[in-house]
Image (cartoon, rainbow, N blue to C red):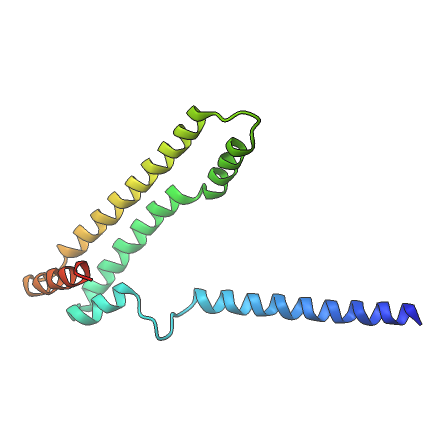
Length: 145
């Protein structure tokens, strides 16, 4: 009698676990795809500036290139986390190791900001003069928020 209860409990646990994994997989797939009713900034830019197809393709290429550069700089997040944990959990605190690790992270953030600024500069210079004026107004409005 007890064996039957254990088997039933095991079956229910397996079913619940598979439902949970299926749900997580669905959510991950859904979030990787189209954003639905939440347009990205670039979508807003395309609509607001009435970009040509050629401009859209050029902007897409710029964004993809900058994303690859930024991803290369951020692919070591797990290693950084592990190094920080090692410093924190060590018997003695190594201030120099912390400073070096923190400085490395700050340098990477600065490089990412530089990549972003360069891509925005490149995008801006793809625009026609009227689009540039509208772009400036959009930036000013965004800064005032």
